[in-house]
Length: 112
Length: 116
Image 1 (tube, rainbow over the protein chains, first blue to last red):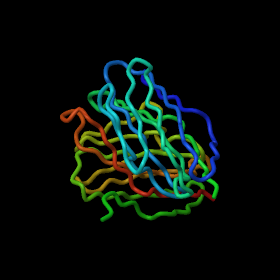
Image 2 (cartoon, rainbow over the protein chains, first blue to last red):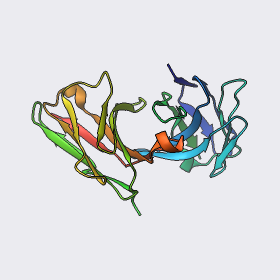
Image 3 (cartoon, rainbow over the protein chains, first blue to last red):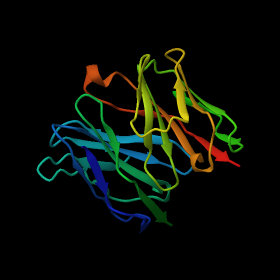
C-alpha cells in the first residue's frame, strides 16, 4: 500500500537558519503530494502541494519539489522564523482520492 | 471566514458516557472525513462520507459511529468512550476527488476529547 516516511524530529533551529525536512513516499501510479502544518492546539493547514513530477509547490517561503526519480518531496525554507514552530506532515493522495496517507510528522522548534 | 468548524474545541466526558462531536462546513464539499490524532502522532482516518455514502476504515472500532444529516454537517458519536479514546478529533472536507482526481483536504481546528 501507499506510505510516507519523514525524517524524525524534533528539529531545533535558530532563527534565520535554513530548513530541510525530508519526505519520501511509496505509491503506485502518480500520487499528488502535500505538506500540511499544524500549529500548537490547532488543526492541520495545507501549506503547499504538487500534483505531478517536477512540480514545485511554494507558500510562505516554503518550497518542495516533486521528484519522481527519488520518490521524494522534501520541504525547504531559506530562513525560518520563530512563528514557523509547528509540526509538519507530508502526505500523499492517489489519483482518485481514495487513499490519503499522512507521514508521522516532524516537529520543528525555532529559537530566537 | 472559518470554513470547517468544529464544536466544541474541548470536550470532557466520563468513561462509558456517550459523547457527540460536531463538524460543519461552509465549503459545500461532497466529502467529509473524521480523523483521530493522538499525541505526537499523525492523524488516523476513522471514516468518511462521499455525499451520503459512508465509508468505514477496516480498523475503526465499532464504538465509533458517524452521521451526516445534510451536506453541511457531520457528527462523530462515541458510544462508550474509554480512556484510550482521549485524543484530538479532526474533521476535514474535500471536493469529490473521484471526479477531480485531486484530494485537497481542508481541516477544522479539532476537538480535544478528555475521558475521565
